[in-house]
Length: 314
Image 1 (cartoon, rainbow, N blue to C red):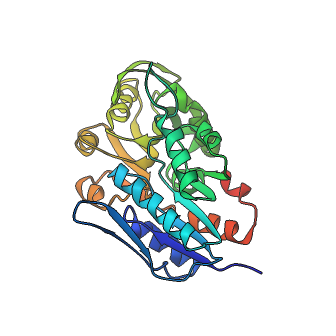
Image 2: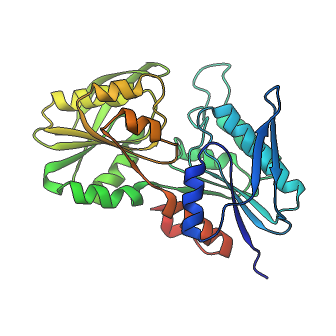
Image 3: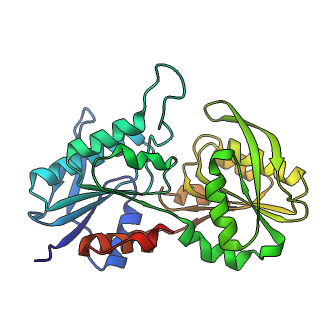
Protein backbone atom coordinates (compact mmCIF):
# COMPACT_ATOMS: atom_id res chain seq x y z
CA UNK A 1 0.00 0.00 0.00
CA UNK A 2 1.35 3.44 -0.91
CA UNK A 3 2.26 5.47 2.16
CA UNK A 4 1.21 9.06 2.54
CA UNK A 5 3.65 11.95 2.16
CA UNK A 6 4.41 14.85 4.48
CA UNK A 7 6.99 17.64 4.13
CA UNK A 8 8.22 19.41 7.25
CA UNK A 9 10.45 22.45 7.59
CA UNK A 10 12.79 23.78 10.23
CA UNK A 11 13.51 27.46 10.72
CA UNK A 12 16.44 27.65 8.29
CA UNK A 13 14.50 28.19 5.04
CA UNK A 14 10.68 27.99 5.38
CA UNK A 15 9.99 29.79 2.04
CA UNK A 16 11.78 27.06 0.10
CA UNK A 17 9.84 24.35 1.94
CA UNK A 18 6.56 26.13 1.23
CA UNK A 19 7.42 26.42 -2.46
CA UNK A 20 8.27 22.72 -2.60
CA UNK A 21 4.94 21.85 -0.97
CA UNK A 22 3.08 23.91 -3.59
CA UNK A 23 4.82 22.06 -6.43
CA UNK A 24 4.15 18.68 -4.80
CA UNK A 25 0.53 19.71 -4.17
CA UNK A 26 0.31 19.23 -0.42
CA UNK A 27 0.11 21.47 2.66
CA UNK A 28 3.25 21.80 4.82
CA UNK A 29 3.48 19.33 7.69
CA UNK A 30 2.33 20.50 11.12
CA UNK A 31 5.38 20.99 13.32
CA UNK A 32 6.62 23.53 15.81
CA UNK A 33 10.23 24.37 16.59
CA UNK A 34 10.69 26.44 19.75
CA UNK A 35 13.32 27.16 22.38
CA UNK A 36 13.47 27.01 26.13
CA UNK A 37 14.77 29.99 28.08
CA UNK A 38 18.30 28.57 28.10
CA UNK A 39 18.32 28.13 24.31
CA UNK A 40 17.56 24.40 24.14
CA UNK A 41 15.61 23.45 21.01
CA UNK A 42 12.23 21.76 21.38
CA UNK A 43 10.29 20.17 18.50
CA UNK A 44 6.67 19.08 18.49
CA UNK A 45 5.08 17.21 15.57
CA UNK A 46 1.42 18.19 15.37
CA UNK A 47 0.07 15.35 13.24
CA UNK A 48 0.05 11.56 13.02
CA UNK A 49 3.09 10.34 11.05
CA UNK A 50 2.91 6.60 11.78
CA UNK A 51 3.94 4.83 8.57
CA UNK A 52 4.20 8.13 6.69
CA UNK A 53 7.06 9.07 4.32
CA UNK A 54 8.40 12.21 6.01
CA UNK A 55 10.69 14.75 4.34
CA UNK A 56 12.45 17.50 6.30
CA UNK A 57 13.65 20.53 4.31
CA UNK A 58 16.44 22.12 6.33
CA UNK A 59 19.65 23.57 4.87
CA UNK A 60 22.32 23.65 7.55
CA UNK A 61 23.19 27.28 6.86
CA UNK A 62 23.84 30.10 9.33
CA UNK A 63 23.29 29.87 12.21
CA UNK A 64 24.84 26.55 11.22
CA UNK A 65 24.85 24.78 14.57
CA UNK A 66 21.27 25.81 15.38
CA UNK A 67 20.09 24.64 11.95
CA UNK A 68 21.87 21.31 12.35
CA UNK A 69 20.50 20.70 15.85
CA UNK A 70 16.97 21.58 14.71
CA UNK A 71 17.29 19.00 11.95
CA UNK A 72 18.64 16.30 14.25
CA UNK A 73 15.92 16.86 16.84
CA UNK A 74 13.18 16.86 14.18
CA UNK A 75 14.52 13.55 12.86
CA UNK A 76 14.50 12.11 16.37
CA UNK A 77 10.94 13.33 16.99
CA UNK A 78 9.73 11.68 13.77
CA UNK A 79 11.58 8.45 14.50
CA UNK A 80 9.96 8.21 17.95
CA UNK A 81 6.57 8.91 16.32
CA UNK A 82 7.02 5.78 14.13
CA UNK A 83 7.44 7.59 10.81
CA UNK A 84 7.62 5.19 7.86
CA UNK A 85 10.75 6.86 6.47
CA UNK A 86 12.64 10.05 7.28
CA UNK A 87 14.38 11.81 4.39
CA UNK A 88 16.60 14.75 5.33
CA UNK A 89 16.61 17.33 2.51
CA UNK A 90 19.72 19.48 2.97
CA UNK A 91 19.78 21.83 -0.04
CA UNK A 92 22.96 23.27 1.49
CA UNK A 93 25.16 20.82 3.42
CA UNK A 94 26.96 22.72 6.16
CA UNK A 95 30.47 21.59 7.20
CA UNK A 96 31.00 20.18 3.68
CA UNK A 97 34.29 22.07 3.33
CA UNK A 98 35.74 20.04 6.21
CA UNK A 99 35.79 16.83 4.17
CA UNK A 100 39.40 15.79 4.85
CA UNK A 101 42.33 16.44 7.18
CA UNK A 102 43.97 19.47 5.61
CA UNK A 103 46.44 19.78 8.49
CA UNK A 104 47.58 17.50 11.32
CA UNK A 105 45.20 17.13 14.28
CA UNK A 106 42.16 18.61 12.51
CA UNK A 107 38.67 17.05 12.29
CA UNK A 108 36.74 15.68 9.35
CA UNK A 109 33.54 17.43 10.37
CA UNK A 110 31.57 16.43 7.26
CA UNK A 111 31.92 12.79 8.34
CA UNK A 112 30.79 13.71 11.86
CA UNK A 113 27.65 15.37 10.47
CA UNK A 114 26.96 12.26 8.38
CA UNK A 115 27.23 10.09 11.49
CA UNK A 116 24.95 12.41 13.46
CA UNK A 117 22.24 12.35 10.78
CA UNK A 118 22.36 8.56 10.60
CA UNK A 119 22.39 8.11 14.38
CA UNK A 120 19.43 10.49 14.77
CA UNK A 121 17.36 8.23 12.52
CA UNK A 122 17.45 9.61 8.96
CA UNK A 123 16.80 6.83 6.44
CA UNK A 124 17.88 8.84 3.39
CA UNK A 125 19.63 12.15 2.66
CA UNK A 126 19.37 14.46 -0.33
CA UNK A 127 21.59 17.45 -1.01
CA UNK A 128 22.54 19.78 -3.86
CA UNK A 129 26.04 20.48 -5.22
CA UNK A 130 28.17 19.12 -2.42
CA UNK A 131 31.48 20.92 -2.03
CA UNK A 132 33.15 17.51 -2.26
CA UNK A 133 31.36 14.63 -3.96
CA UNK A 134 33.11 12.03 -1.81
CA UNK A 135 30.95 13.11 1.15
CA UNK A 136 28.35 10.73 -0.25
CA UNK A 137 30.65 7.92 0.85
CA UNK A 138 30.52 9.11 4.45
CA UNK A 139 26.94 7.80 4.69
CA UNK A 140 25.82 4.20 5.13
CA UNK A 141 22.29 5.13 4.08
CA UNK A 142 21.10 6.15 0.58
CA UNK A 143 22.31 9.58 -0.49
CA UNK A 144 20.95 11.50 -3.48
CA UNK A 145 23.23 14.19 -4.86
CA UNK A 146 21.52 16.69 -7.18
CA UNK A 147 23.09 19.48 -9.22
CA UNK A 148 21.91 23.03 -9.89
CA UNK A 149 23.12 22.99 -13.51
CA UNK A 150 19.67 21.99 -14.92
CA UNK A 151 18.19 25.06 -13.20
CA UNK A 152 20.88 27.43 -14.47
CA UNK A 153 20.81 25.94 -17.99
CA UNK A 154 17.83 27.89 -19.31
CA UNK A 155 18.97 31.23 -17.90
CA UNK A 156 22.53 30.97 -19.20
CA UNK A 157 21.50 29.73 -22.64
CA UNK A 158 19.12 32.68 -23.03
CA UNK A 159 21.73 35.22 -21.89
CA UNK A 160 24.91 34.01 -23.62
CA UNK A 161 25.94 33.03 -27.15
CA UNK A 162 28.51 30.20 -27.45
CA UNK A 163 31.01 32.02 -29.66
CA UNK A 164 31.26 35.06 -27.38
CA UNK A 165 31.30 33.24 -24.02
CA UNK A 166 33.88 31.50 -21.86
CA UNK A 167 33.19 29.56 -18.66
CA UNK A 168 35.85 30.07 -15.99
CA UNK A 169 36.64 27.82 -13.04
CA UNK A 170 37.88 29.93 -10.10
CA UNK A 171 40.20 27.11 -8.98
CA UNK A 172 41.52 23.72 -10.11
CA UNK A 173 39.05 21.85 -7.90
CA UNK A 174 36.08 23.27 -9.80
CA UNK A 175 37.23 22.30 -13.31
CA UNK A 176 34.80 19.39 -13.62
CA UNK A 177 31.88 21.64 -12.68
CA UNK A 178 33.00 24.36 -15.11
CA UNK A 179 33.38 21.77 -17.87
CA UNK A 180 29.73 20.77 -17.42
CA UNK A 181 28.62 24.38 -17.88
CA UNK A 182 30.89 24.91 -20.89
CA UNK A 183 29.36 21.81 -22.47
CA UNK A 184 25.84 23.11 -21.73
CA UNK A 185 26.66 26.43 -23.42
CA UNK A 186 28.89 24.97 -26.13
CA UNK A 187 31.65 27.45 -25.29
CA UNK A 188 35.31 27.40 -24.28
CA UNK A 189 36.77 26.86 -20.81
CA UNK A 190 39.38 28.72 -18.75
CA UNK A 191 40.92 27.92 -15.36
CA UNK A 192 42.33 30.15 -12.63
CA UNK A 193 45.35 28.97 -10.67
CA UNK A 194 44.47 30.02 -7.12
CA UNK A 195 46.55 29.63 -3.99
CA UNK A 196 44.84 29.69 -0.60
CA UNK A 197 47.02 31.10 2.15
CA UNK A 198 44.40 30.58 4.89
CA UNK A 199 40.67 29.98 5.30
CA UNK A 200 38.70 32.58 3.28
CA UNK A 201 41.97 34.07 1.98
CA UNK A 202 43.10 33.34 -1.60
CA UNK A 203 45.31 34.83 -4.28
CA UNK A 204 45.18 34.47 -8.08
CA UNK A 205 48.49 33.44 -9.67
CA UNK A 206 47.73 32.48 -13.27
CA UNK A 207 44.87 32.29 -15.78
CA UNK A 208 44.88 29.29 -18.10
CA UNK A 209 42.83 29.84 -21.25
CA UNK A 210 41.70 32.66 -23.52
CA UNK A 211 39.16 35.21 -22.23
CA UNK A 212 40.12 38.12 -24.46
CA UNK A 213 37.03 40.01 -25.68
CA UNK A 214 34.62 37.41 -24.29
CA UNK A 215 31.83 37.45 -21.72
CA UNK A 216 33.14 35.32 -18.87
CA UNK A 217 31.03 33.26 -16.46
CA UNK A 218 32.69 32.25 -13.20
CA UNK A 219 31.10 29.01 -11.98
CA UNK A 220 31.39 27.77 -8.39
CA UNK A 221 29.45 25.80 -5.79
CA UNK A 222 29.77 28.25 -2.87
CA UNK A 223 30.25 31.99 -2.52
CA UNK A 224 31.19 32.62 1.10
CA UNK A 225 33.02 35.90 1.76
CA UNK A 226 33.30 36.47 -2.03
CA UNK A 227 37.04 37.08 -1.78
CA UNK A 228 37.91 34.30 -4.23
CA UNK A 229 35.10 35.31 -6.58
CA UNK A 230 35.97 39.00 -6.72
CA UNK A 231 39.71 38.34 -7.08
CA UNK A 232 38.97 35.91 -9.89
CA UNK A 233 36.64 38.40 -11.60
CA UNK A 234 39.31 41.09 -11.38
CA UNK A 235 41.91 38.77 -12.91
CA UNK A 236 39.61 37.71 -15.73
CA UNK A 237 38.75 41.33 -16.49
CA UNK A 238 42.44 42.24 -16.47
CA UNK A 239 43.06 39.54 -19.10
CA UNK A 240 40.66 41.23 -21.49
CA UNK A 241 37.19 39.84 -20.78
CA UNK A 242 34.46 42.26 -21.89
CA UNK A 243 32.13 41.36 -19.00
CA UNK A 244 32.32 39.06 -16.01
CA UNK A 245 29.37 37.17 -14.53
CA UNK A 246 29.11 34.51 -11.83
CA UNK A 247 26.82 31.56 -11.13
CA UNK A 248 27.01 29.67 -7.86
CA UNK A 249 24.66 27.22 -6.18
CA UNK A 250 25.05 28.29 -2.57
CA UNK A 251 25.11 31.98 -1.71
CA UNK A 252 26.51 31.84 1.81
CA UNK A 253 27.57 35.49 1.40
CA UNK A 254 28.94 36.00 4.88
CA UNK A 255 30.88 38.93 6.32
CA UNK A 256 31.97 41.46 3.67
CA UNK A 257 30.61 39.45 0.72
CA UNK A 258 27.87 41.86 -0.36
CA UNK A 259 30.15 44.91 -0.13
CA UNK A 260 32.80 43.10 -2.14
CA UNK A 261 30.34 42.17 -4.89
CA UNK A 262 28.95 45.72 -5.00
CA UNK A 263 32.49 47.09 -5.42
CA UNK A 264 33.66 44.43 -7.89
CA UNK A 265 33.81 44.23 -11.69
CA UNK A 266 31.04 41.64 -11.71
CA UNK A 267 28.02 42.52 -13.85
CA UNK A 268 25.64 39.98 -12.30
CA UNK A 269 25.76 37.09 -9.83
CA UNK A 270 23.26 34.22 -9.91
CA UNK A 271 22.70 32.05 -6.83
CA UNK A 272 19.96 29.60 -5.90
CA UNK A 273 17.62 29.70 -2.91
CA UNK A 274 19.25 26.82 -1.03
CA UNK A 275 19.94 29.59 1.51
CA UNK A 276 17.47 32.47 2.13
CA UNK A 277 18.56 35.55 0.16
CA UNK A 278 15.85 38.19 0.56
CA UNK A 279 17.92 40.57 2.72
CA UNK A 280 21.00 40.19 0.53
CA UNK A 281 19.07 40.80 -2.69
CA UNK A 282 17.77 44.05 -1.18
CA UNK A 283 21.38 45.12 -0.47
CA UNK A 284 22.84 44.09 -3.84
CA UNK A 285 21.17 44.80 -7.17
CA UNK A 286 23.70 42.57 -8.97
CA UNK A 287 22.43 39.51 -7.10
CA UNK A 288 19.70 37.39 -8.71
CA UNK A 289 18.14 34.30 -7.12
CA UNK A 290 17.11 31.19 -9.05
CA UNK A 291 14.69 28.76 -7.40
CA UNK A 292 15.43 25.07 -6.85
CA UNK A 293 11.86 24.47 -5.65
CA UNK A 294 10.64 22.62 -8.78
CA UNK A 295 13.77 20.42 -8.91
CA UNK A 296 13.56 19.43 -5.23
CA UNK A 297 9.80 18.88 -5.47
CA UNK A 298 10.27 16.48 -8.38
CA UNK A 299 13.00 14.62 -6.46
CA UNK A 300 10.71 14.27 -3.43
CA UNK A 301 7.84 13.06 -5.61
CA UNK A 302 10.04 10.40 -7.22
CA UNK A 303 11.52 9.22 -3.93
CA UNK A 304 8.04 8.94 -2.44
CA UNK A 305 6.74 6.84 -5.34
CA UNK A 306 9.90 4.74 -5.59
CA UNK A 307 10.80 6.08 -9.04
CA UNK A 308 14.31 6.68 -10.37
CA UNK A 309 15.75 10.17 -9.94
CA UNK A 310 18.84 9.51 -12.07
CA UNK A 311 17.66 11.91 -14.78
CA UNK A 312 17.72 14.74 -12.21
CA UNK A 313 21.44 14.24 -11.56
CA UNK A 314 22.52 16.03 -14.76
